[in-house]
Amino acid sequence: DNLPDAWRTVGPYLAAQPGAPVLVVGGQAKSIGLFAAGIAVALGSTRVDYIDTSHTRVALAASLGANAQHVTGKEPWLRKGTPIHGGGYAVTVDASNHRWGLDYAVRTLAPGGTATSVGFYLFKGTPLPLWQMYLNESTFRIGLSNPRADLPAVLELVASGRFQPGKVTTRVADWDDAAEAFLEPGTKAVVARARTTTGA
Image 1: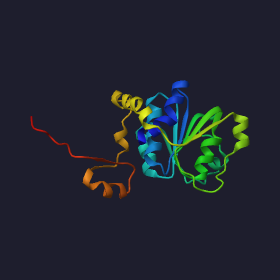
Image 2: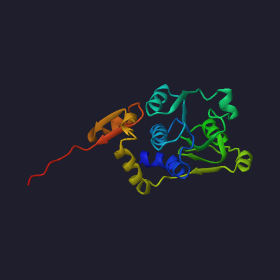
Image 3: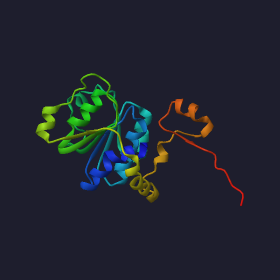
Image 4: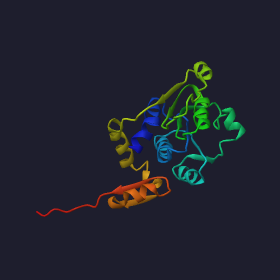
C-alpha cells in the first residue's frame, strides 16, 4: 500500500494544478516520501524539493529526479519555515514523523496549498501553526489511505515507464525470508512468493 499512499499525497493535486511545485519532507515513512517525490516528478511538477536527515534517502530522491537536500532538522531556515522554493509550494508532503518536519511542510505552503501527512503523531498536543494556516487558507490532510481506489492510477503511471519505484527497493526477498528482510536496515523491502507451475 506504500505506492497508493504516496500517490494520494500528490496525484490529485497535480491533476488539479498541473506543474505545481511540490515539497516532500522525508523521514520515518521512508519509501512513502520517496515514492511521493518520484510520482510528483513523473506527473510533471515543475519543481520537486525533497529534504531528509538520511544521506541514503537524499541520494535515492535525487535519482528519482527531485532536488534533494540533506538536513539535520536544526537549520535556521527550516525552523523559520522559509521555503527552498520562493513563493512556497502548492503541495507539501510530510513523511518525517518529526514535529519539525510537520511544521515545515505546513509553513511552506503557498496560499491555498495542501499539506498531507502520512506519519503517525502519538505525542500529546502536536502543534500546528493554525493562525498562519487560517490566513493562508491552507488545507491539512491526515489519515488512512485508500489503496484500492488509487491503485489503478499508480499502476498506469508505473506501466508508462515515467515512474520507476524499483529504484527505492533496497532488497527483494523470498516469501520465507520476509521476517528477516523487513528487519534489515534499508528503505524498502519487497517479498514475493515463489511462482508455481501447474500441469495441464
